[in-house]
Length: 462
Ligand code: AMP
Image (cartoon, protein in one colour):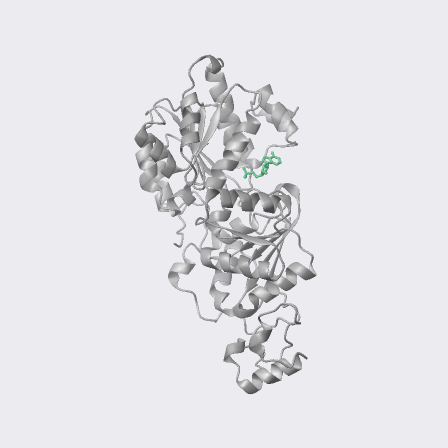
């Protein structure tokens, strides 16, 4: 039995499950959110994945629903709490948390998201639920078909509201809000606070309790961060080298684009490293399978885009690799938050090419510190890609590697040792990553300044 959770006002059915989960202390967001939510107040919380925010709103939500109507099981169930999330994965995880934390309470929940057959969802809604976890688009489908009814919602949660706006859900959200009863409790969770989030919060929340917890960032002693400066064209080779030589078994790799994620996963597979990509274009069963394989250890490398990775909760993930730096510095913080979670240590490695200098500078500004650089021997930056070599240089490079082949061929197989730095190639390693390198376009650097969440807005890049 967890005494400290009980002190926050949680009932025995909930402190019991918390203890069974092995949580001994509430996290900061839980310590702040649980009492005010139990008191029925609206909440505006600045907290991101990894802070324990899900339990922070789910535990008091469950308690309020069960306290208000302990005999709910005798009535036809009506949706009394609605939790909206940006992605299917996050929705699934939140609903799993609702089930876990609510296992000793007579409350029912269900999950509604797109990309899968709607009929089982209709059936579950028809049977009656107390708590509905949904992504906005599919929920609107149900509302239009009148297979869901929100007229009895007492508590609304917008989880990762910033990401929902980033994904263009604002109109859907407003249409859903219009269908809710006016009297209700509203909880808005967001990692960042743009003007759009502020506007949404202003129209939605009544005298909210403001909760801001420390961002999971470089201060997390549990995450060792490192940068490997490398030429862009050798990143994949370096990744293969790191995974193989370090015998990494579970690696989450971030790329910027879906196409890049697919390509990288395919190439890794060809090289004998089990890899799969997870992104919004994949069908839901494919995404679920990919994640399950990764968790079970059959997939060694999961390649993800930022949006797809949002909300992934993989415990004790040892390695996160930024194959490309994100355009928005805050996304770097989200990404590295995937490792070193819940008390375990982790390693976040970024493969950074000279073209990414400006993005790196913005990230370091956000973290207010410099991340360690380590050049991996054999991967010194400053070498031209093989297709740019003159025939003579190619022969020279091939010969020096002991392969006697043109450089273009060596990129095709990772079995070959990496090229040595050549005396004839300019030693640009030290020049790489200098601040006077060309800057990224302004749009890529938006949101660089990161003032306290509730004071001044941060702009997000697109
Ligand atoms: P979240 O920020 O909600 O995605 O939660 C991140 C992770 O922290 C999940 O794996 C939770 O199971 C775990 N967690 C939540 N609350 C606690 C707690 N009080 N102590 C330890 N771990 C927790």
